[in-house]
Amino acid sequence: MRIIPAIDIIDGKCVRLSKGDYDTKIIYNENPLEVAKSFEAHGIEYLHLVDLDGAKSSKIVNYKILEQIANQTSLKIDFGGGLKSDDDLRIAFESGANQITGGSIAVKNRAIFEKWISEYGSDKIILGADAKDEKIAVSGWLEDSDEKLIPFIQDYQNKGIQYVICTDIAKDGMLEGPSFDLYEKILNEAKGVKLIASGGISTFDELPKLAELGCEGTIIGKAIYEGRITLKQLENYILNK
Image (tube, rainbow, N blue to C red):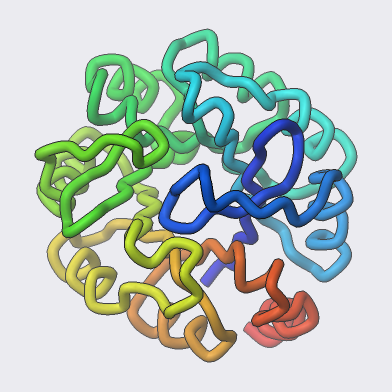
């Protein structure tokens, strides 16, 4: 299972939210590049970079930070937050993203998201399936939708999607453990999906359980920043896989 630390950006700074609520913002570091380099120094190869300003403003905002991290580390970056147009996508890839994650766009403008899958390939486009009570939430989780989570994923599998990041919003940033039952359900019903678990990771012991379920990767955010999971533990996990 791939270990994918998260860096969320607001005003160019590394922050974390709880349940996607911008009013709960905690700034952990003024310098996201410094954080990315510390991940890389511990053998981590992947990074989940989220432009929270972009998610709110409906266009890419913090692409300069993406560019900086891509140029000064060898991390493979998946980038999301506010990607709404062909231009946004072009900027993200030109700035060094290896993959992009589309969440709101996959609900609100299926035609453009499906076009991206066929143009860039399913290894480059990740479906962001963020859920609240098994319904999809959009626009930085500020809006609910009527889309049911598993049929939504299955529908996009039929369109070629392989990678899905699923965040249970109720768990995000709460350090109360991930939604094991939900992930198990997704893996049982959306056969063959490369599921990346996100939200609620709070202790190192949860990682082998997610791997055992069949998750392809896991995104870890606040647990690292709050010292619940150390980079040394992650380094050892990666070395011993």
